[in-house]
Each structure stands twice: as structure tokens, then as C-alpha cells.
Image (cartoon, rainbow, N blue to C red; front, side, top):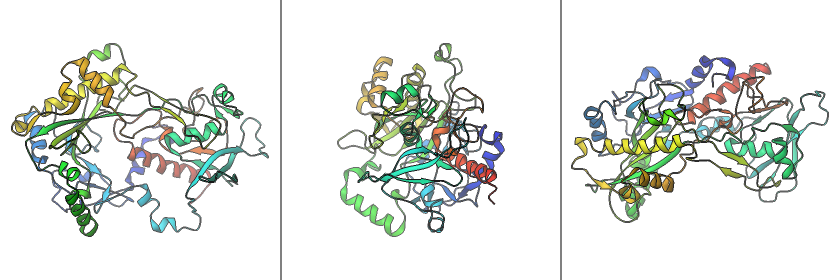
Length: 459
């Protein structure tokens, strides 16, 4: 990722868009994060959970009882992510803080040079007919249409360049519909190839997640929200009026990041896909309730296990030449033996976590399919039947070196072999970060803004 502008210092300065803020309940956060590694004057709000759970003290106690496997980490965003600590969330006063509420906040959406078209689908990017560069076609015209009517197709030409930010699925779909991709695949669909970039839509990388539940000896869990309609209405009213209660945050208050042992047998046959010995292979997320887990009554604790350094790869392909047709998405989950091995170890780690003495009178036993996963083979079957996406895909328009024969964009995020087109979203990441992808995407966007302003001499 350091290829963007060739300097990681630029990425770090871009991350100063963070605005650390107090949690919704204004509790004392001393000892729950390190203020020295956070920004306080940026645009995106970050905070700790604004609602405490009955399991919080037990989770922290486990770091003392099992410190070798689950050491306490004061701040996982310090550059040293391994260990267990308090989860940090993009929440502001009990409401979601996102790129939509920050970069597109009311004071920005009112700018005279910003127009947002709703219910509109970009169908293709078009080559400009008066392009003078023989070697590099100029792709700076956007074709779009109303999503429901689909006609007429309207075109707009950019005076400087087009910035494509349609996401890991949308960006390759638009490029492929525009004739930019693998020429053979395009011809088979009746699309005229304009630019040969075979890696468009390849290298789809996503983490894989699994929800694991245990019955608990408690009637004070978030499961009550799912089973009690009256309680749900009361909590929603409390949130709407006072921005308080469990709805001010997500179900997790803590998170752990761990690595496989260096002598794990999987490394005899597969190279370590993590970026270094300080990068995690898997994540544990702790939730005070099943929240959509086993059906029926009961109270649960959930530990989500996520392989954050996956080796599996998938693809995005077109179903047809109709730009309104949904693309064919093959995430390729668990196609690498490393991923199934890492997930198996993550589940075993979660079991060891709940075997700590502090959980003795609280955890009753595993629930759902986990209860039957008593051997490695049965555990693998349970994983394959229940795993899904944490919605962290990247890589389908991957960045590579300037003169590389592979990849889709150059280090400045400009599309290879063309002029006038730049890609700015998670699709440019050649590898997935060993963590959640929200902040890395913000960093890419901030750095891209600097590169664009530099190129066009914009102050």
C-alpha cells in the first residue's frame, strides 16, 4: 500500500482525519484507549462503546487469567494490534459516523460544484473520440441512465479526469462493461474490447467470518431485544429521544487479534499470507447475545471468528453485456487450505477463551452446529456450512508498480494503459489489510485527493 505516493508518511497524515469523541454514555475511558495515537480535530468521529454489558468485566478478567494467548492491548490502533482490548467504533453521540455523514455532511453537500444523482446507474465509461494520444486512449466520458427507466443513456465528459469509486463490485463491473478487461472474456459476451487489462475483476479478496454461540447462565443479554417486541420499541424510543441504551452502539465492546503459532503445520505447505509477525491471522469479536444466531428462546454469548489475512481469492465477472444485469460474484471463500486451517484454529481459540476460570459459572455449553463440531472434520464441516462475509472485500482493480505487466491501476491510482481515469476505492488494494477496511479506504481517498490536487495544481 506504500506505493500510493511512495510514502507511508502521507498515509499516516491522511489518517489524521480522525476526530476522537466521548462515548454516548460519557463513561470514564481511562485505561480503555491511548489518546497519544489518535486525532481529535478531524472529520470522522471515533469513540468507544457507549453502552456497557454484563460480560465486560469477565472479558477483561480473561486477559489476566490467560495472558499468554489473550494479552491486554490498551490500543489496537497504535501500530501494535495483537492482543485483546476495547473496540473502537465510528460512532458519534450514539449515531453512525461514516463517509456519508462526514464527507457528505450538509455543509459539503450544499457546495455548488457537487451534484449527487440518486437512482442513477453508470452504465459505461467511453473513449473520447478526439483523443490525440495514440498509445493511451482517453477515457473521460461517463454514460449513465435512470435505474428504473434504463433509457435514455446520458453522457457527460470530464474536463480533467473521471474518478471511479463504485466499490469492489461496482468498479470492475463498470470497467468490464466499458470494454476494459480480459479481451477474450469480453468478446464472449459480445463486448468490444477497448483496453486489455486481464486482471480487472480478478484478485477478489475478502475476509471470512463465522458466528459461534454458547448458552449462558443469564437472562441479561441482548437476546432479549430479539425476543421481546415491547422491549425493542421501548429501546428504540429511548434511543430516538435520548441517544442512550444498547442501540447507541454495536453488540461488541471488545475485540482480539491473534496469530497462528509460527510452527503451525500449515506453514509447511503455504507461505504466511500476513504482512509480518506483528500482523494478525484471525480476529475474535465478543457479543453479549446471539443476535440472529440459534432460533428459539435462550440467552447466549457470541464469539465471531474472522480470518483477517486470507489466502483465498475470488472474481467479479459479467453475466451479460447488459450493464443493468447483476454481476457474477465468486468470493472464493475457504478455497485456500490456509483459510480453513486458520478458521479452525480461531474457533479453538474461542473455546479456550471461554474455558478461563472467570466463565465457569456463566457459560453452559456450545449452541447450534458448534455443539456437534467435536472433531476436526466435523469442525471443518460446521465452518463451511456457516461461514460468511464480514463485508470487507478488496482487490478487484489492484494496484501494481508503474511498469508491471499485471494489475489494473498504477501507484497514483490512474488506470493502466489509458488516460483520464482514476480509481479510488477498496478495489485498488492488492492485498487485504489484516483488520477492518474502513480506515484504509479513508486513507486511500485522502491520499488520492492530494494526488489529484497536485496534478491539477488545485489549492
